[in-house]
Amino acid sequence: MYLTSNDTMDFSLSDHQKLTRDTVRQFMENEVRPGVRQRDREGRFPVGEIRKLAELGCCGMLVPEDWGGPGLDTVSYVLMLEEVARVDAAMATSLGVTNSAVQVPLLGFGAEAQKKKYLRRLATGEILGAFCLTEPQAGSDAAGIQVRAVRDGSVYRLNGSKTWVTNGSVAGVFIVFAKTDPDVGGKGMSAFLVEPSFKGFRVGRHEEKMGQLSSPSVEIVLNDCEVPAENRLGEEGQGLKIALSALDGGRIGIGALAVGLAQGALEESTKYAKQRRAFGKTIAEFQAIQWMLADMETELEAARGLVHYAAWLKDSGGRMGAASSKAKLYASEMVNRVVAKAVQIHGSVGYSRETDVERMYRDARVITIYEGTSEVQRMIIARDLGL
Ligand SMILES: Cc1cc2nc3c(=O)[nH]c(=O)nc-3n(C[C@H](O)[C@H](O)[C@H](O)COP(=O)(O)OP(=O)(O)OC[C@H]3O[C@@H](n4cnc5c(N)ncnc54)[C@H](O)[C@@H]3O)c2cc1C
Image 1 (cartoon, protein in one colour):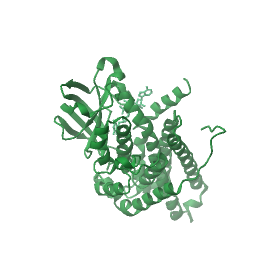
Image 2 (spheres, rainbow, N blue to C red):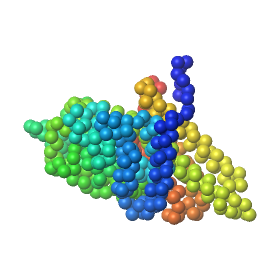
Image 3 (cartoon, rainbow, N blue to C red):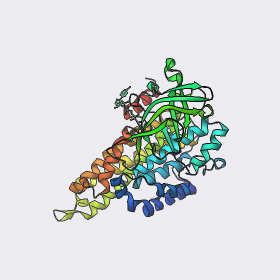
Image 4 (tube, rainbow, N blue to C red):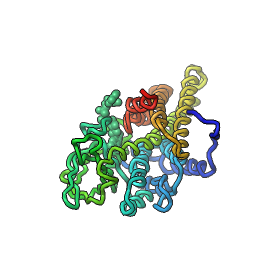
């Protein structure tokens, strides 16, 4: 993190950023926390809660007012995701996909007519978006996807399947990546805006997962799926560029999600340590517990610094470079260390489905995997070092 002599260094939040954080925090405490454990048990998507968050502008935060969003900055966006994830990481994952992975590419690469048709409805939360890149045979190796798109007059016909599609069973529009020219590898990828009502589109298997149970992850089956040619996003061959640019910004959001979840786990652990008694004292009086909490807080603050710095860089229009990868890498590994300590501090209680830290432990695991694994982030950071 380097500042040149012309840069200013200011860690304070604007009044509007603070208002965003406080409003979302209050909403999450009052409207979401009471039902979060039960919804996790039932694997139930929070339709009503997300609709209300949409009224606060949280479904299209980065979209300008002209297109129905509040047009906020990336720092406000990460503050929102932190507050959501502090209570419900699964909900933050769903919001991250629709806000960042779907609306940002639509804003950047979409034709005017596509924005008219989809962006406003996404930004106001009338519909949610889904992002379909991963396939059974290709995850980290995005250029290795096999879904095929063939032009047939006024339509493209898409064939193949996508896996692990977040929001896949509830979304109103999907960005689907497919090969239009398989002979040229990544350069032959294109992106398409696909509606679930299109002929040949089907939601397949729901993944049975370890955590984040109320955020649906599904298979999407494309069987001669007919997509109007005007629904191609960007030019033919631009698909990989669109996917990578979406993931670049998306990683800041995943870092924020990790920070929020870690914050929630730290708060639960501090509260519990002050209540639980052993050997005639509260466990908070034992240095071993204090040191765990001190390490959790320190690592959390370090991760928050990386995430906010990456968000600030994005807002200032400077070269983001590997900043979003560093934020995602460190925050996602940090949250797994933090939730492990949170369970340890709770003892057997932390292993019980009756506590939030048990859910947080399961919810954290995927964060080093999705939107680019830790290994992929290290590859990007190493490349930035000129290696
Ligand atoms: C809950 C959940 C939600 C998801 N949501 C979405 C979504 O909405 N849309 C979507 O498109 N995808 C989604 N994904 C998929 C996710 O992005 C992929 O799982 C991820 O990119 C990793 O791909 P993979 O699982 O195929 O692992 P692989 O690519 O098979 O990797 C397996 C292992 O090999 C390592 N590896 C791979 N290549 C290298 C290399 N070159 N050097 C070193 N190590 C390497 C990986 O880091 C990993 O440890 C989701 C996944 C989960 C679990």
